[in-house]
Image (tube, rainbow, N blue to C red; front, side, top):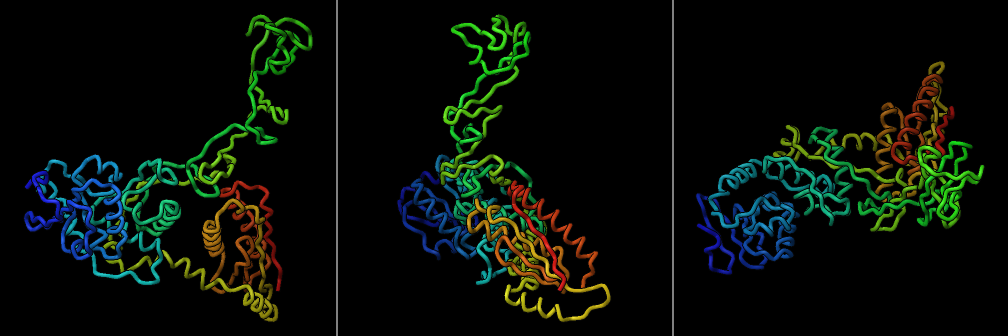
Length: 453
């Protein structure tokens, strides 16, 4: 049965070897029952806005019988414009050409245990489960695709309908955390440089003056006069069409014999500052933020592959990423409010412990300027990750509190002085490394101190 022979404009159901194809010939929105009742959907219409709206509506459903539905289009150009966000295109081919593929997808979808998302399931957890199920049902990996329209310069098929484009970088971070737990494996494909403020990839690179940041700069060759060893900018030697050394008044005739040009000097026409090199600034076209190269945010783009643990999650979503939240739950058990922390610290000061042991209050703080280029969302993510780092140094009887994203208190119970001394040195070294690696900020004013209670 060839699609091009269909002469009706109405949406119809066609059956091929017990597979029901819902053929969409018009711009009439499909009902939920129509989507669930068919095995696959074929869009014959090439109205791209209608297709995008319908596919997004299907993928954002919370019913796996809907968001995992195989979707095809009958026009290759439309298929390419959709960035291959559908399962394939038919063109002039018959439905039987995709029967085997659809049967395999339907078979896999039926193996997924019935479930409904709990209210406590986070936005990223929900979409990660959908991703795992999509990869499982299609038996494939997922690679990033370049896109000039994407906020970070790349997008992922299927995910692009679930996650707002401007939040994709946050979901990528979440997938990396899932990789650490074991649900997926990732293979690095590319690293992209993003604006530190808005994570945009549309950057304009300019050479600027180190002193005043002006772009009104000019590169000029330095001339080295062999005879008197004088080195200066070429403009100092220029007299009409000749080169005359300003030190010894000799004419320079032949490069390589009388002189050479060992390097260049950058001259700023705005402030007259001179330097050997210019400063490269990346201006974000989206938000206008001027980023020093060292401050650009690097994001890894990677191929996503399901592991056996990820396949189990796809088949049994009720096991909802319990291990992904275990570290956070453990942190919640040890983290307390600042007021309660101060109360317990006062109580600890009155307790008596074995000889050479006591309770200590450790204070950690660093400059607020360190995270000044982060958005509020990124600051929350940083604070969460920072608390997970602190958790590695705490025992079950210890406690901590977050005063602010830049200040933390630790209550270390029944420790000796040597333990505290080593803890201080370890924290100073590792936190310095974290701040330098993430913010390239040697002036973060880190303070780590201990007080015996």
